Image 1 (tube, helix red, strand yellow):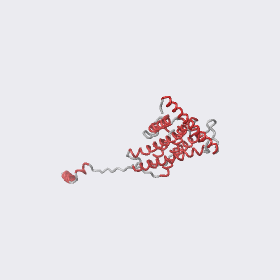
Image 2: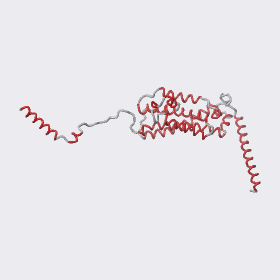
Image 3: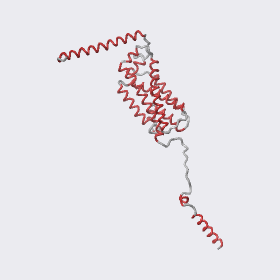
Image 4: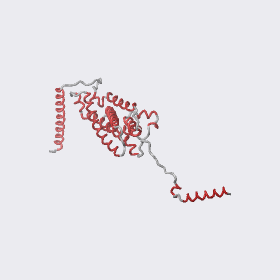
Amino acid sequence: MRRIHSSLEGLDAALQQARSVPPEILVSPFNAAITEVSRLPSMPAVFYAPGALALLIQHLAVTFAALSLVRERELGLSEVFKVSPLGVSEALVGKYLAFTFIAGAVAAVLSASMIAFGTTIDDPGLYATILLLMILASLGLGFAVSGVARTDTQAVQYSMMILLVSIFFTGFVLPLEQLILGVRAISFLLPATYGILAMHDTLFRATPVEPLVLGGLALYAAVLAAVDPCEEGSASLLYEALDGRPQRVPSVTQLGRYLVARRIQLTLEVVHELLDLGRVHGALGLE
């Protein structure tokens, strides 16, 4: 009986102590604290920003490079380059430098906007190297497109087709691991694939970029820069159309003679058009 009596007294004391505890503590006795240990951003805008930047830079460089040589061929400027003292290497390096500067300026503005959204760049040097290699590779792809396109409209259409393929097959929307092997092979034919992989490693995962990614991107740019475009496109500017050898450097006198002859030809065409227009007006009785 004494043991039962002492147990009841202890239970009564426990009940009295429980009544003194606030109800919110009884309902939720534990306090949960969540700590984020992953570097992957939780905001979709931050996660997709590097991929969107890679796609925009690739599309800009491809379009600029493709339209440059196609329009030169349509306007007849490729003939001027053929007889000019400018060599093949100088023309190609000049185009690469000009378009790299323009695309680099756009990439700097987009990177600043990306930082404003909350993305942090821990290694600016590696980030700039990735952008530079991606720009060079995209320019090489654009010059290859110019060898296939006949007009500037076709060049723009091909550039848009490359952009659409890049949206779905570069890891921007779906991870590359979810693509079948054949489609994954197509993915690595696009510069944006290497750029997105490298940016995710250096910006989100805080891991060193795989050497195969940077090496593949550099090899991609080098191979496309060394490829001889077909004759219909930029071959009239970069290579001899007949045998593929580099052009001979003509003298300044030959260039002057060609420009004079070209000016005379254009003047004669304008004169013939005016004479034909005068005959039409005379036949119609117009002044």
